[in-house]
Every structure is written in structure tokens, then in C-alpha cells.
Image (cartoon, rainbow, N blue to C red; front, side, top):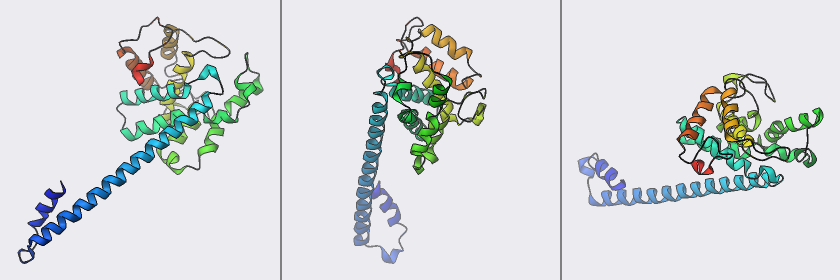
Length: 251
């Protein structure tokens, strides 16, 4: 490609300046620039991959606090990415959704373990403490400028908002809730319902799907819910009566 560019530019050089030396010099110059650009790009990709692995490690460490929610963040990320792809979002948006989904519960680091692991109904005060985790998470990472620009902070702060305006922390409604947070909200709820928790067994798939459908336009964005249902329905390993959905669809 560089040789082609130089060749084309060669013909626009004033005829009195046409020399083989100039041509060779330009080829070598563009070759050096190409090599440096490729090296910088590979370095940037390596940094990005390392950051993603660090984020995964952090989310896994959080999940280890509760054996009943093991891999929850990874599952939510996979589901959220599948929704984003179904909605034909850009690659940059999908990358941001993956990162935000991995970090969506990071604020639970600030929640006392005896509340997270309580085997029984939470008191009103304990429930308020749980509800503080989106704001805690936001405060933990709001200094990261990239997260502010790419929507990751929106996911962490608003993934418990509800489409009908009855969620928390701000009671946002409908499309006032950032898109990425609405996507993660569906993925989060699905994994929560299909996973065993300290206070209950997992729900069967028929019940889970029924809840998704019943709560369209209430808890969940209807367009996003339909997109996720389309993903599940296309999965050949998925059966309506199974208690767990195959993770392979989102690998």
C-alpha cells in the first residue's frame, strides 16, 4: 500500500524534480512510518487486552465474595454483549457495554458481607444499604475519564433504574435511562433469575422468560427485552423447560 501511495505521488512531483533517488527515499520513508504505526497499534491492542483482563480479574474477585453469584459479572457481560450485537450497535459501544457489565456491581465491595450473604429477608435498612452499591461503584471509578466518555459510568450508576421510573438511585424513566444501562439491566436480571442465590434456588426458564415478557415497559425496555428474547430463541441448545440456559451462545 505504501509503495502504491508513493508511486501515485511520484507522478505529481514537478518533472524537473523526478529522480529515482527521491522515489526510493519516499518509499523507505513510508515503509518506516508503516512499521512504526503497526508497532504502535499492536502496543495499543496489547494495552487494551491487558486492561480487559484486569477488569475481568477484578469482577471475578468481587464474585468470589459470594459463591452463589460466582461468575455473575462475566455472565452479565456475555448476555449484554449478545443484546448489543442483536441491536447492531457499534464495536466501540459493545466494548464499553462489556466493560461496564463486568464492573456493574463493583460498588458491592463497599457492602458489608453479612448483608450480602444474609440467608433471609433483608430489613428495610439493609435493603437501603444494598441499594447504595450503584452510587458506591460510581464514586469508586468516576475519576476515570474514559469511563465517563464511553458510558461505563452510566452502566455502573444506573443499571438498577426501571423503565417505569420506580428504580434507583434516581428514579429515571424510559429513555432517560442511558441505553447501555438499560441493556445491562436486562442481562443482570436474567442472570439473577437463572442463578442460585443464598436466599433461594434458581427460577426455571419458563418462569424467567415469563417475567421478562410481563415486565416489558415496566422494569425493562421493551425493545431491548425483545432483542434478548430473539437471541435466546435462536439458540439451538435452548429449551423452554430447562432450568439453565446454555452459556455457549454468549461465548
